[in-house]
Image 1: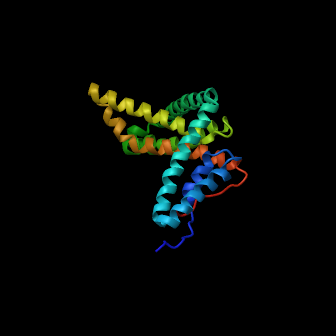
Image 2 (image 1 turned 120 degrees about the vertical axis):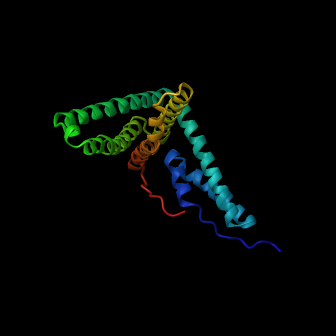
Image 3 (image 1 turned 90 degrees about the vertical axis):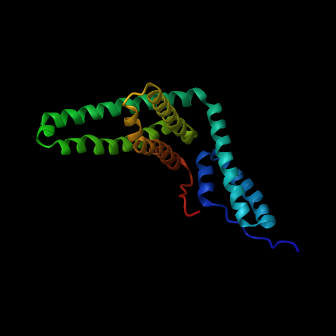
Length: 215
């Protein structure tokens, strides 16, 4: 007995992510190809198999599109990423210095050490996450049509350098490895924020500003 045909709705989040990376002129064609094959799988093997296939190939497609974007303008993306990296470091150090100077000028540590540490840490780290969104947006703005590739590259560069720092700290047994590990959640938030910044620019430039919905 032949399986009954099933109407397949592609995972909207997966489709939306593909549109973030696909050139505007190719997005519809790429999504059409994914839908055609996943619909065939749904008819033959069921909706769960089709949904799993769609996610796997959507992620593969994203990787291919990111690679194509980087190969199409490697110097431009590399320049934007390097500038974004150094700008992040400069603004982070500058803001930390200014906050320290402000708190020290009011002798807050002498009167209330707990409040001093709170204002030095949490607002600074929250501000850094917001700063990373802006940096991601700036990097994305500099490479029209390749916003997500540039933002992801910057995030991966920071992840790579963070891992190198952890490894170096582990081998040298310096106490600051604990600082790296304590900062991991905030760094993860910053890496995500960079990608979000790039996505915001891509959405602002997209002729159809779609939003993700439930899978």
